[in-house]
Length: 264
Image (cartoon, rainbow, N blue to C red; front, side, top):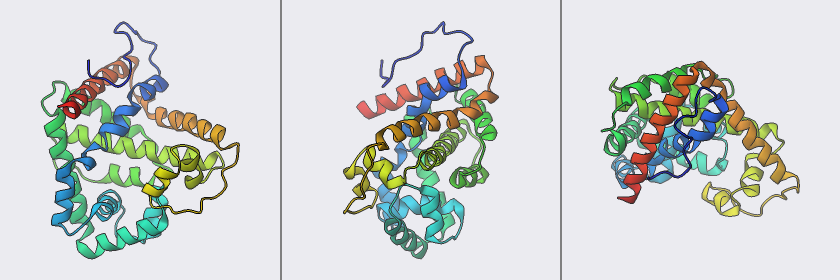
């Protein structure tokens, strides 16, 4: 079976908590929710707009915030170097209207979703459940999630609804992680250095010399991860126990389709 984490037993019963849902689905939300951006077709679409990787990324992801200063996008995205964001954001704004970039990004997201898991049964039900969670999720401290939740969906078919719900849930988790990192006493850069390391920091536009990382950073980052899960879990309380089980099962199917696509 193509799956990158162990399944819960099928008779797991009514004891599935919101924390269990997050633990079981975070890989799908974060992985499948953003995988369309790695498709070669996505890069080609950006090039047609005159945009390289980062301008298309920030224009597409942050464009829902409106025509704001780069500092706003930097604050919302959190883990990217300000100089990288400012240069990319300026390039995107000069190349095309932000609404055009966002629409192009969404179109590529939906094309990818239809190709990867659009033929699955149960997408209508998954869309319904995921949308309940999205609506129950608190937006405070999560400007990108709030902006994406308020963005009008371009269609109401099940694939579109699932793809956008996953994107929104990913932004909710991303915002929750930024809140948790700051609450732990780390900066976004020290969190990267204490976790993935300097290679990831450079990939996100940061440049050495690196700040000193305190010995307590590893424990602080672990605590931030736990808090991220707790913050991400809160909206799943809006689902019944049976609906949580159903949600996990349906996302397992999406993940299986994604794994088959990757291996294919």
